[in-house]
Each structure stands twice: as C-alpha cells, then as structure tokens.
Image (tube, rainbow, N blue to C red; front, side):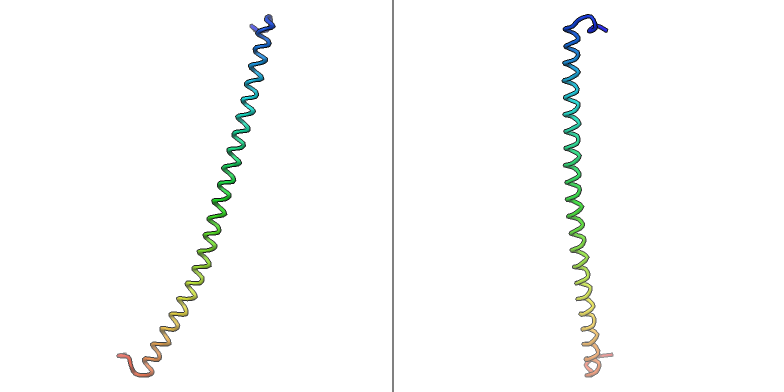
Length: 89
C-alpha cells in the first residue's frame, strides 16, 4: 500500500475516510428524513381520503333516505289521485 510507508499519505487516507464516512452518515440521515417526510405525507393523504370516504358514505345514506321518503310521497300522491279519480288509469 502506498500510504503504509508515508505518514502523510496515511494521515491523508484516514482524513479522506473520515470525510467520506461523515458524508455517508449525512446521506443516510437525509434518506431517513426524506422517508419520514414521505410517510407523513402518505399518512395525511390516507387520512384525508378516509375522511372524504366517510363523509360521502354518510351523505349517500342521507340521500338514500331522502330518496326513499320522496318515493313514498310520490306513491301516496298517486294513490290519492286514484282515490279521487283524478288519474287517467
């Protein structure tokens, strides 16, 4: 090895190793931060979509109930028209 006989080269290679190691640690930290940010974003999106789904399910149930009530009212009005012989049937 070239640096084995030269203390300056040995020190330089150790310094480079330390710098590279620091950069690798920094890179891992940045990757971890990015992963955690991504996970938070995905969780928020999932929570938003779940809340929207729940809202739409409730709204659908309400509209279905209103539709059933209107259907019953139409049938009652048809029966009333027939009873009073105001229909062509």
